[in-house]
Amino acid sequence: MAALIDSLKEGVGMLKRKDDDAFDRLSNRYTIGMLVTMSLFIATKTYVGDPIDCFTPQEFHDNWVAYTDNYCWIKNTYYVPLDNSLIGPDGLPTPDHSAGEELPYYQWVPIILAFMIAMFAIPVYFWEFAMWKSGYDIESIIKVASKADNINPEERDETNKYLVAQLYRHITFHRNQEQTLGKLPLGNKYGRFLFIMYIITKCLYIAIPLILLNILKTMMGAGFSDYGVRALNGLVMDDGSYIANPMFPRLTMCDFAVRRLGGNIQRYSVQCLLSVNLFNEKVFLVLWWWLWFLAIISIVGLLIWLVRTLRPNSAFGFCSKYLRLLNVVNMSSHSDEQDVRTFVGDYLGLDGVFCMRLLAKNTADVTAAEIITELFKKWRVGRGDKSSLSESKPMLAEDNV
Image (cartoon, rainbow, N blue to C red; front, side, top):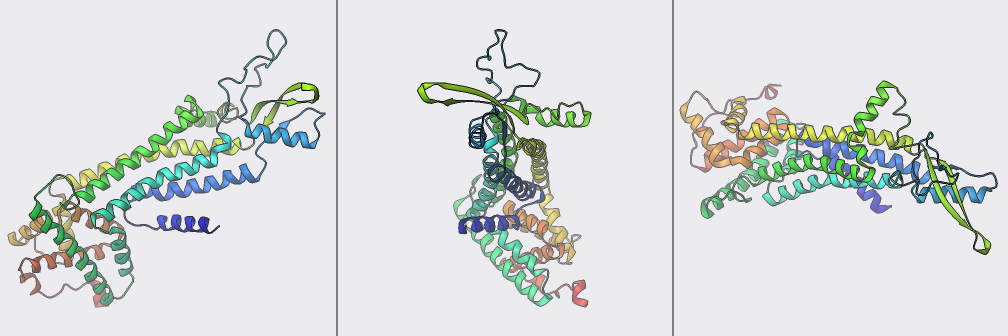
């Protein structure tokens, strides 16, 4: 029980993380929350309720009926349309009539959903490892900055100065190493490691839904490839194909043998009501469409980040917007413009600007502007330019209140 409570706490903590964008949250928050809900619901029906009821011969007493239900639940049942006969032309049962129609999945649906939860958690932990490796604790930075939005201006200024001091030490340390060791295409000491790791994380968010769709296709048969389209068409057209869904049938067949005294083996074929499939088909219909949606929307999110980050002058435009917000620089001045370009290109680098973008996405614009402004001022002081500090501190609207 303690382990379960710890797992739930960890899951809730994951839902509260703010170190990514809205596209990622669709996969690592809302999808995981949806899968947990589905898994608990199906598990309750599967392991607590009565997921299967078999129609047994009249001579079966209660113990035999219970045995039949349990056996047919453990052993995979198979689907035969009601129009198909189980008796061959010779009047005998057709041999191997269950071949190709066996249903191997329904006992394992809660475990399948749990596996999907684990798959969607992979990018979360990969991104967490990448942040730890890079030295940028974006989650803590955004968490502290978000709290600063709700405190008085004096305390907020102190909080922001603390964040800026930490960022300044980290960026300066890696810039010094870069000058000593030289430039390399990769590595957490060269100002581009964090962004590259985030792009890989984005690719994981694209790959995982596609991988899961292929795994489900392997488990449930080739018919799962277009299951969502066929099921939705059947539901809209109301032609009965959705009700008599052969992939998630309600009525299935089960074969079993009973050994009697004297070595006599008696075989039975019974019809079973697989009521859990009433819920399974809805769950996998939603999952089919949701996984395709996640793959497509994650591709869109990746393209947006690539265009936004790699477009010429994008980083300069982003930082100058927030610096102008607090009247720190005059972009009509050539010296100020050159300072901003140097600050963005030579000091912040790709990772620094990326960190500021995530900060701006997860906090208020004023908070992001204050942090970028203080970092810019500290950079100017660090290189010996104190002219920026001779001006009075810009006054915010809320300071007049």
